Image (tube, rainbow, N blue to C red; front, side, top):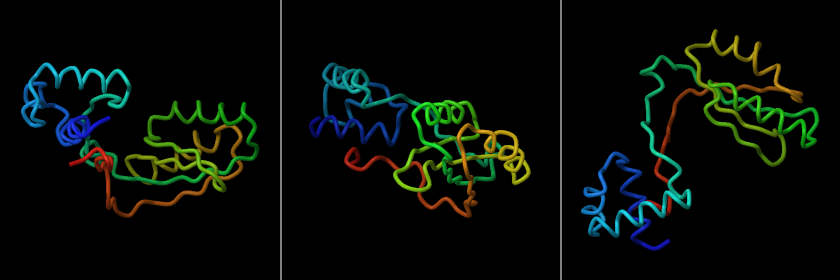
Length: 153
C-alpha cells in the first residue's frame, strides 16, 4: 500500500459516498487508475464495506453499557458457542475477546435502563459458558467512529 492508496482511504473515511470521478479528483488521479486502485482495495478487503453512520440517539438508542464477561470455562467449543450466541443479539454492537480477565467486552445499546435490564436477564445471562457479567454504564461518548490512524491525511 502506497501513499496514494492511503490517501484514497483517508478521503473515503471522510465521505464514503463520493463517486469514483469525485474521488479521483480529490486524490489527484485520473478516473481509470483511481477505479483500479479502489477495486483492489475492495478485493483485498482493505475496504470492508460502505455504510451510513447513524446517531444512536436519533433512533431511540439512548442507553449504552459496556459489559465485561468472565467465562466459567474456556474450551474451544464453549468459546465458539458463546461467540455465535453473542453475534445473534442485535443490541450487541461490538464484541471483543480480550487477553486476561475479563474474557470479553461487549458494547450494548438499548432504549433505556429497563430495556437493558431485560436484555441482561433474558439474553446475556443465558449465554453459554459465562461465569460473571459486569456492566458499566457509559456516561458520555468522547471519541466515536474516528478514522483509522495511518489511513488518514
